[in-house]
Image (tube, rainbow, N blue to C red; front, side):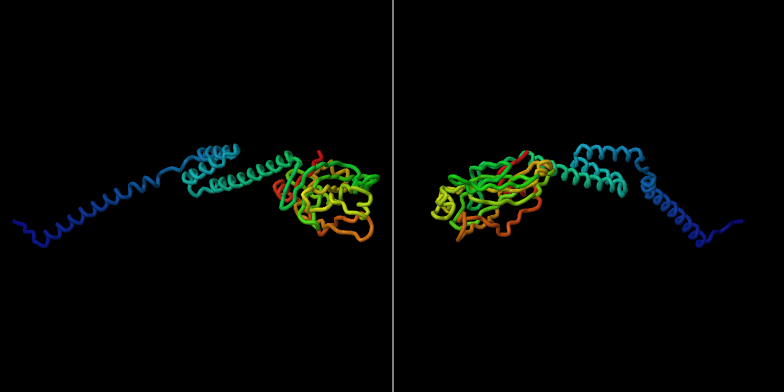
Length: 294
């Protein structure tokens, strides 16, 4: 008996075979495409011991002050351990340590500048010239003249820090810079007190009493005028650190004339204000160092 297969049956079987082949191909392709991803997913992170060693290595650079190398190293670790909070914290530590190191270096620079700071022999600023500087401690003598002088004592437990100097200033009726004292502690100079300024000497008793002029005490001439300043301070201040006697670069001591009494010329403060605290750079910018004690 012969069996007859219809065309419809043959077409159906062929279609099923094609679908089966296509499904197998898709499955194979999917497997091939997924294989690399699966391999990546199975990649293991660096062991914790490696990270600990890496952190220690970077912190060692920080301890040696090699901040540029430490920043390069932590950048590499950020790629090696993306998003790791320990690495983020390490960068913060390096930044803080670098700031502390800069502050420490600046503090030491200031301390060294004060240790090496010496009095000026001469100085000039604006239209002023300072020369013939000498300093001392004890009672303060001024308005010297033949046969006499004025003397002040600071009192019990106190002394005068004295500065004698010559000053060339512009104009006959001029204002002169004031003198004051600072003590150094660490990296800062602290204000102690302002002083009194007077003429150092007069050529005669008559000139001191205003009977005759004294050309040597007239500003505006080519010859500098001899002045003296006394700053009253406590004796204890010298135990706090070195003491500097300075000339503030701000003319606020006005020259006044008396109609009666002696001497005929005297200086009076016009709101002289000394900074309370100064770094070495600020002090050298704003003052002339006339003398140093200790």
